[in-house]
Image 1 (cartoon, rainbow, N blue to C red):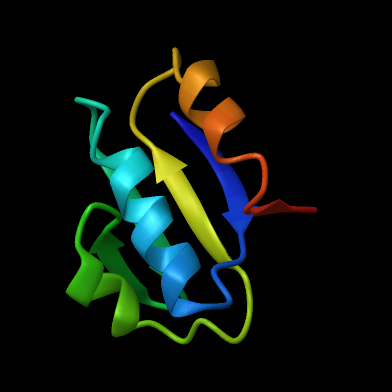
Image 2 (cartoon, rainbow, N blue to C red):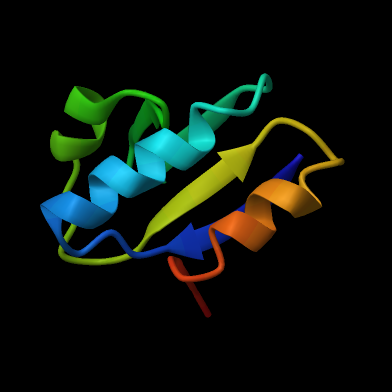
Length: 76
């Protein structure tokens, strides 16, 4: 499992993010505080506080291709 912080600041970036993560077969979650939602759920993502970074948790160790596609969203 790998975790990184991402920032989804605009509605258009959320749509692109969901399109990217939906292509991958493994489970991917987003954590914001005590809330955990499926990263492939557009409605779920909009229920989070997107004004600050959220934690992306990928339930696979072989996800470098996914993280490469998400490099524009990853923050330190």
